[in-house]
Amino acid sequence: MRLLLAGATGAAGSQILKDAVSDPSISSITVLSRRTLPDWLTSTIPENNKTTTIVVNDFTSYSPDLPPQFASHDACIWALGSTSAGKTEAEYTKITYDYVVKMIEALNQGEVDKTREGTDPFRFVFVSGNGADQTEQTSRMFGRVKGRTEKYLLDEIPESSRILSYALRPGAFFPEDPKIWQNTRSTFERVLLTPLKPVFATFIPGRYIPVGELSRFALEAAKGKWDKAAGDEGERVFSNSRMRELLVGRDEL
Image 1 (spheres, helix red, strand yellow):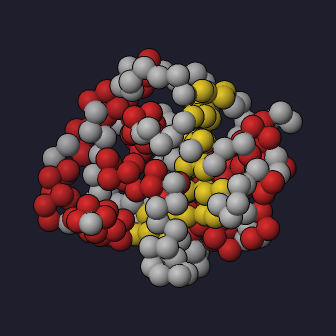
Image 2: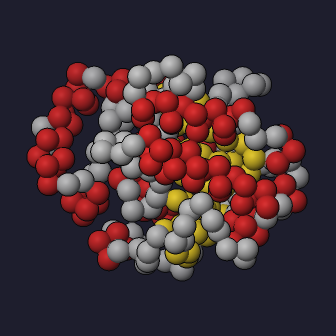
């Protein structure tokens, strides 16, 4: 599988990159990033010759040569995002919603429908979040904007594009690699979150997912493992508890 990955320097994306590099079924990984990957991240992944970084200055405007490159992949995991704290709704919408819309437009511009072999779709895996609300009735900006993005991906992309989208709604997750933990969380966040991890894991497991499980689920979604998770129709939105339930079920097979 040829994977496109956005958000590799984040807490979820960095783990996904690490696991993708080690996955023999993934032949190439193209990372979209505003800058070359930092040393703290590259030092956490095995040496490999299947990772390429495309530096993107503006995620709302891609150069003409990029859409065909994007469309040559088999799947995209979109883990790019930021906290809504301190942002206006317009600023948060640009990062969370507009960037995703522009990527889908780029894939269509690159004629992703013509790159598909047989009946296999191009899978787009959006790392959303617990609390996303597709009705946009929530008072939380995070939930409204994430929900709007989910709705676009699930309801507004025509079947003719051959793009199959999924939304993952993780609860709390914590980087396990010390370098990733140190570089994706501020000092204040590390002090605040360190004692909370065992609390979530022990007392609120439905709102917690180990980052390795989130990474594994995202990669398996990109490879089509969850295409028929719920019968013939298939699920396309996976809550935190549902992801963990399905992973346990697969482990028991």
